[in-house]
View 1 (cartoon, rainbow, N blue to C red):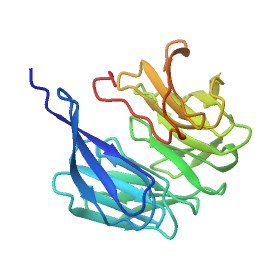
View 2: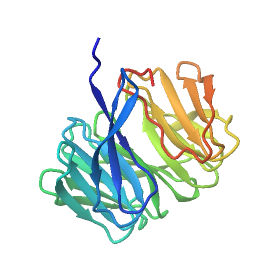
View 3: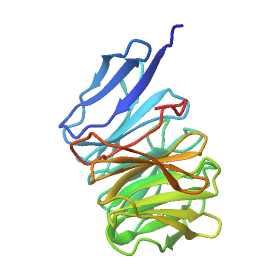
View 4: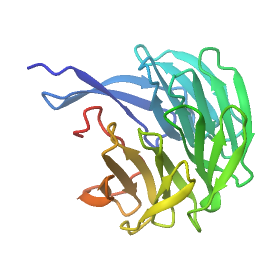
Length: 263
């Protein structure tokens, strides 16, 4: 049986180049597909649009590019005064949210690259952000344990108390819209009840800072990557550990599941 090509976006901490690879799953052979070379500093984040038509990338030099994933051409360039560690497409793919070193959350129109709204976070740098599945809210993580819930329409914000110290590096919403998780420098993962806006569970198994988190597409499993050089998998029904993956020699800056949930 022939299994097609799965496109995988890889963000690496190298200067000026973003590599997008296509992996041929049935033969295990990976071939370089495209190289995007406009960035002049470290690439922080890479995300596919929900409709799979474009790729957005952000970097330390303050530029965000939206690329045509088929030919590598630049569709939009979004300029920021400082570096951009975090970005996310809205669920409908029409808006891109960016979080910057300057502490501002910005919303951009994907089709024309125009700035729609700017929200100020007084805590400082935004390390991680995500849209809620219904597109009504954005949650950001940043300095001093900050987790902030934003209303996209009104711009109103609410600080959520959970991490007591250290930066919050990554945020992920469950597919069902009622839960989310945040990954902290305090070595913990906080599980939040979104309607109640409170922590309902704390995972403390990592030995170092937790830097990245991601749900599987069906929401049954969570992956977490840490500065302890491990990836841990969790059953989201009871938050019991499923497996620990070892072998990396550095901090795990990003984790994601394949669409079928098997990788």
